Length: 243
Image (cartoon, rainbow, N blue to C red):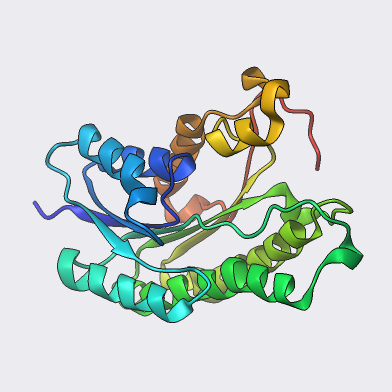
């Protein structure tokens, strides 16, 4: 039986790794799309271990250059077949600065990653999904999509745009059988970048396990068409709600 294909844009060592492992473990072939192959090594290893029959391949692309995303996803379709699940897991700037310290270049960069890159990925797979009346496009996001920030305005601006894109696509193409969802993580993940950010103050009990988060993506994928979620909120039980 032909295996389904999951393409993950932004397949790093945290949530990207967990998503690759989760979908490979459910009989998907997995295409990992990132700037460098080294950056996707953990995801590739995890997917291969989850199912030794899984075809796991790396494709280079830079979210700030939408044409490279289009080219890589076209190559995935050529090599592996039609894409059943696309997960856009790239993230824009998480730099701390006050709004008046933002530069025009900062704003352009975050918009390129969070909105234009996400649109390029969706645009690459949507026509075929519409033709087949099936498929899923999932966007990894954050609670920043619902609230501005005095400390992380770039992150908030990017996620606001991503949420608007996701909702617009869902309203336009859900009727064609394509499940489009915006995953709003109201938490910090138990991943190396967060340990580096918080240092010794890092409390692992307060962080969300990436494997648990990936399970929520999988359960969302399993939803029947008569009961789709288009906004999915995720937080660990220890989280003090920020929205």
